[in-house]
Figure 1 (cartoon, rainbow, N blue to C red):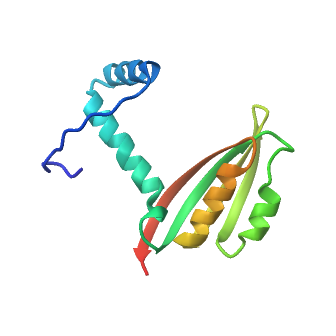
Figure 2 (tube, rainbow, N blue to C red; figure 1 turned 90 degrees about the horizontal axis):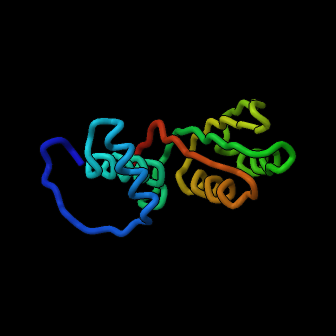
Length: 133
């Protein structure tokens, strides 16, 4: 929401443990739950914009997996039309891939879906720029 914009109130239900975590974080950050939830929703929408309208985008995938349990080599090859480059790191018993992607949102969405469905992977997409097509 833009600063100074109108606000809309609505109710949500979340697990008690998640509500406690939210309250603890709000207190630690000296803010309120509404502000944190608004920030989380904005970040989620930005990360998943590919579901709304086709566009051309540039972004990063950060993928964390256990060694030998990732389909990254096959996926990087299958999506080489949008994969611009990547780096592979090992730390703390994990493989970490940072993948730079650029192309049509439908292809990047397909890669995101494939990564999310890969067993043993944690995936984050960080959009950097987009433009309408």
